[in-house]
Every structure is written in C-alpha cells, then in structure tokens.
Image (cartoon, rainbow, N blue to C red; front, side):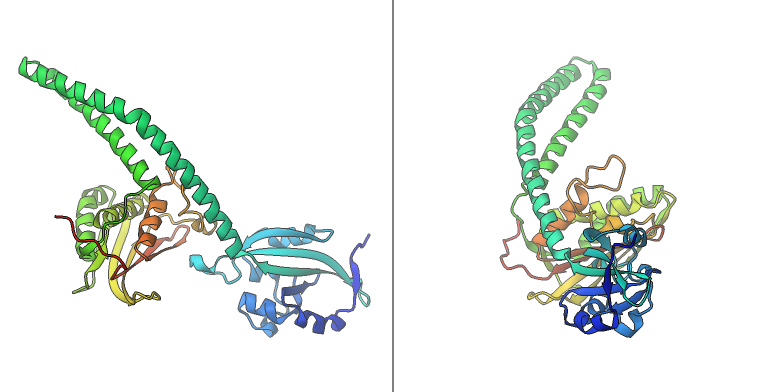
Length: 367
C-alpha cells in the first residue's frame, strides 16, 4: 500500500527554491530529481551536476541508502556523513535528515523527500559540555585519590629509604636491589598521581622565549632508541632560523613526547616518522606562527574516529587511558594555537600543530 503524498513534481520546483533548508527529491533509485540552491551550497556542487546523482555519491555514510529506503513514514534521523568526501577532519559534518515518502500524480513511482540541516556546531557544543563535565568529575576524583594515597605512599617511601640505608650499613647489600625496585614503583605511582592531577587541574601556563626546533630535537633524541627498536626511521626537516616562540616549555615537551610515542606505536612493523616545521601566517590576531607537522606511515585511523580522538577518556588503543591527545589539545589551545589530525586507515596519520609566536601575557623565564 502506497502511503506517500501525491505531488506534482514540476509544480514544486519553485517552492523548493524558496525554502531556506537544503532539500533533495530522490526517485526510487535514490537518484536526485530535484535540488534547491541551499542543498547545492551544502554539498558544494552545482545543481545541474547534482541532478541524476545517486545519494551514495554525495554522502559516504555506508548505510544511508538503506536507511532512506526503509523509511515508510515521515521521521527525523541524525546521521553523520561527509558531504564533501576527503581525508581532512574539517570535511566532516553532522546532518539532521528528515525523510518523507511522496508520490507523483502522473507516475506510480514513489519518491523520497529529504530535508537536510547542518547541526555540526550544535552537536560539537553539546560534546564540549559533556567533556567539561567529565573533566570536572575527573578533577574531583583526582583530588580524592591524591589525598587518600599521597600521604601513605610518602610514608612508605620514607620507611623503605630508611630500611635501605640500614641494610647497606649492616652489610646486607643483596637486599638493597629489591628495595630499589619497590622505591622505583612507588615513584611511578607518585608520578601517575601528579600526571592525573595536572591533566584535570593543570598549573598556570609558564611562558618563556623558547626555540621550538631545539625542543623537537631534544624530544626526538629522547625517543630515538625506541624508534630504532621498532624499525622506525626518523626524517627531520626543520626550518632554518625559526623565530623563538613564547611557550610553556615543560607542557610543550610533554606534547611532543606524547605525539612521537603515538606515532611509533602506530608503526608496529616499522615505518617512517617525519617531523617538519615552517613559519606560517596563521589566521590569528597574533599574526605569524610556527607550524609543526608530525607524519607517520602507520596503521591510520578510521574516519569515524577522527572527530573523537581528542576527547578525554577516548582511546583507539586497547587499554589506553584516553588522556594523551586530550592533554595535547588542551596545551596547544592554551597557547592560542591549533591542533589538527588527518588520517586514512592503512595509510598513516598526520598531526599538525600551530603555535603563535607571542602570548598576550608573558611570564619571566624561570632561573
């Protein structure tokens, strides 16, 4: 039984054009029969090129044709698609699609009317609110953990150090090594508490003039052995005479180490880690900025996961805590900069960071 509305398609072309929403009319083969100006602008394709195009050529969502065909009555569905397919994260949009079946008075063919609304910004704001709530909860949790475990750990460490000194003076050197291993583990537990506390309630940024290229070289030297162990070649192309930036050196160094480590882990069979810098005229009031690009030839990331990788507690790695990339974004954005990620499954990942040369309020360098 055909439950669709009867419609004279040619008579509705002018009505479509007046609508502010993006509207498509699809035939039974899910090819575009009518399209208005708003829809052409949404997809970035001229209307004459859209006519006759299959919906799957406009949206990379694999289940979209099936979802459209299965709709037997008017309803709304929130569907994440790529209106302009491409590897860049910024090409991803979230469209709210209202679908209604219609039929023509002059044809037994059933059509489907699609009204599309770009709700990307709204969804992103909602996600940011959820992330902020998560961070607030994590901050309370971290404070409680630090309070409950910090003092006992410090007491245990002091007692073990006293015991170690006593055993050494009494000639029991063979017992010192196990104590040293235990003390090392206690220090690691302290470091974990500090990292968690810094992530959820970071100290104020301490900006000082710094050479970003020098920080990169020092960080690469730190992970060089690990890269060699995993068969990863390091390719470095740093700009000559790069101006100094006002950076929180400690935080930026941790960002670099996190990103280099992620890149190496993404290449379990070996590969190439490329690092480059250049001066760029960023779209910021601050003017010039330094652009840093970190590229690997590793496993890559699914397109659907790219928008999620900077979320707190979200990880693509089994057993991952989901704090590393979120920390990186937090640090870069505190600098007034930008961090982007582009990736293709099986073809590697590129992370781009932009740091403005100057900060609004610069603190004196620590002695």
